Image (cartoon, rainbow, N blue to C red; front, top):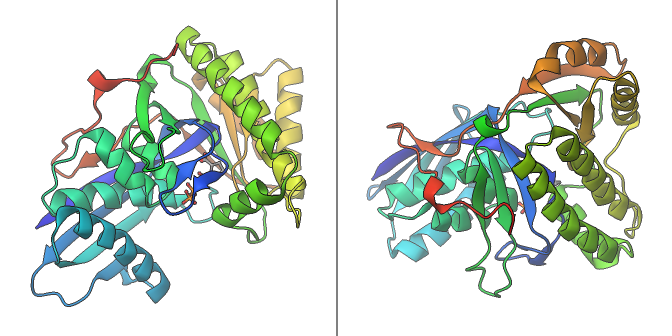
Length: 340
Ligand code: 2P0
């Protein structure tokens, strides 16, 4: 009982920042992302009746106990749902540079959910798979699909209406995302802890919720119009608001470092010179710069001059989950409503 799946990372243009249910990973706001072509995880899950416990190999090596425990806890949910009691060997290859500021949890849990549910014999729809990925890590539910994707927060307590829907194929609205790595020390507050602290203590959190809802509608409109200027402007504003909530938390925290500010400043300078670029930042110091594909070379050359910049990875919209046999599971007939 074996299956292999490949899933890519995604970058949120409207951020997911806060949970209303920690166990089921139900968010307090809907989010919108673009799946990227460059960074991905390939995972094989093999359920075997000879095994007496789960084993987890990460990049060819036996993973630390803590990581194996996380995978095993996730597989327990899959086993429980399938009514199967077999243990598994899990082999994961993570093609996500650890310091690139991309959460490998998105591609990791998307690949793990796809491989494990297929290996155990569940024949899930993409929507059900998105829900399974979500209970591993919230942002993973968006990586089930390629291109532009919305994670609809849902309202129900059991999470049955909280899943991702594909909005637009990447080819229908090509953009570039430059992943800009800066000199940085380790991040101090993990996103899971950071969002929890913000929800519980930040007086700015209510403001975040109100504007995220509005910005999601505006972002979907920008996608409908294929309006890059709107897309970039809204993404940048949304990221700034997400980070503003952390300054109001108790104790306060900030993911930006001095190198982060240098890149933010450089992006603003590019714009003032007529080169259109926008930034977005996740729960770490690195910056993702959004630009038009035709401007990648010029903008990369300028950003390389910024002293804090260590490396720039150009990315573009990428595909959803695929199995090793190349079967695409993204359900294009089941798209979300861009104007809804
Ligand atoms: C996002 N982030 O929308 C936001 C923006 C970070 C900042 O999703 O606790 O690893 O596993 O659900 O998905 C990172 O958090 O958190 C994230 P869990 P996850 O991409």
